[in-house]
Length: 175
Image 1 (tube, rainbow, N blue to C red):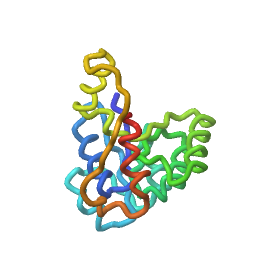
Image 2: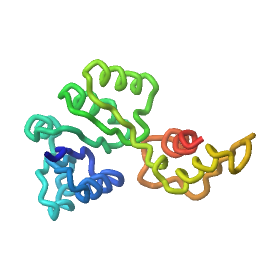
Image 3: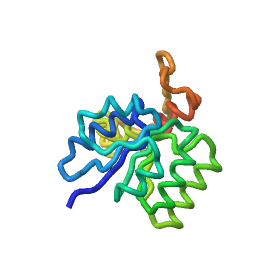
């Protein structure tokens, strides 16, 4: 039996979710959704059911889980709909653009009994995994301070979150 998944939002991160799900043998992409039909056209080669309306996708696709990869300011609204549909969800980080909305998403997921995950991809970075092994083993000694320094321009595709919410959250999570 394959896990039936959907991807909501086909921008910078959504395209990676579609590609990765496509490569997992026990996963069936049962629907992809974006408000922009021109963006959907970029994904026709996969042959997946396409939707410009989230409610229609949630009602018709018999989904087990979805990835929410829409801009941060829409995470709360989209997550509410997914949770109310009883569908498990992975929300790209940050979970929301406010603590109140993040708390609401967590509470709703618990109340509805759906699994909620937040996409913290750096946890799976081989360098981070190895560093954690070294720290846990004591091989690098006692850590007394940690410093993170971001260099380079802020990613152009990020238009609705600040550097702390969108990028520094990786550093904080790794720490």
